[in-house]
Image (tube, rainbow, N blue to C red; front, side, top):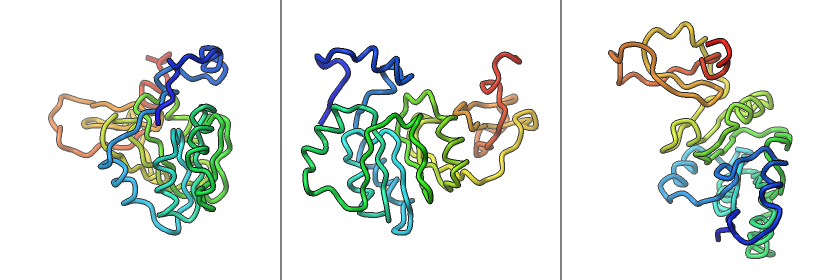
Length: 203
């Protein structure tokens, strides 16, 4: 199922503006089975999961088979309506579907895993901070590196960007890159805070 913003619906531009979303960020397009299976590898029956940008609920339905509770957040009301119509009375008891802007929706108490599969995400830092503040432990995402699945420990220590002399980095704001001369290309990325993208006015 695909409900795109270029369907013949009026008010799309104002909807996107009102919700502080650009067109690419608001679109839904499914990912491949390999990525979904990678997500399942990090979800246990004890987990409470929030999926940000749940689209047509295809992943949320399967997450409900692996987790204790799933909250599926999707901003597109047309997509949510058609998905729920398709699912009908087969909606799992442990799957809560919320048509809302995830930028505004409070992270439910007890959430342990956040899922953010959205390569065009402009608000990574916002979601990162809110999940971390809510006590969530893991963020499963492709939003920073734009490919594969990154498993982020939200409770892991992060160093100031200024202390990194050489190597790859990944910042809580969503920016990634390399610092130095390129002499350590095979090192794992270091989790940092306060990278140049966090405060471009200071550059």
